[in-house]
Length: 147
Image (cartoon, rainbow, N blue to C red):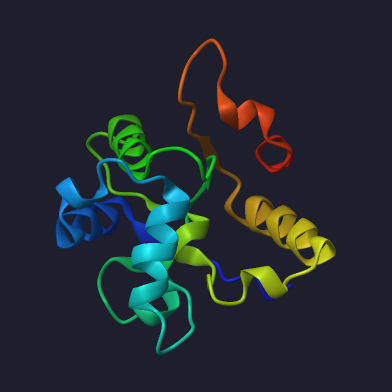
């Protein structure tokens, strides 16, 4: 599989939030942040954000796979990760920044299936973001359960 294994450090994700101004992101889902910010920042290279920023200090080989729902508020996802990893700065494979969002629609189910399996297997660690304890959307999404 040609699944990129690069991830962004948690501090790198927080720096993106600050760069884009948290007040601009308040009501945006992860999907909306991807289309309005990530795709815009990578429009010239068509690479993933991590591939494009690989020479910077906030990108390296991912240590944790982030399972989340794209409908979640982006700031809530970053906040949940910050609380979970308080006191550390892990490198996170977060599909929004780890996979080119310009090519993701061209990938087949079989590619995603093997890519996720290989990515999770190589990292060996998954953190799942849940939005509520009684009806967490992540546990209702087939891909999240698969991950």
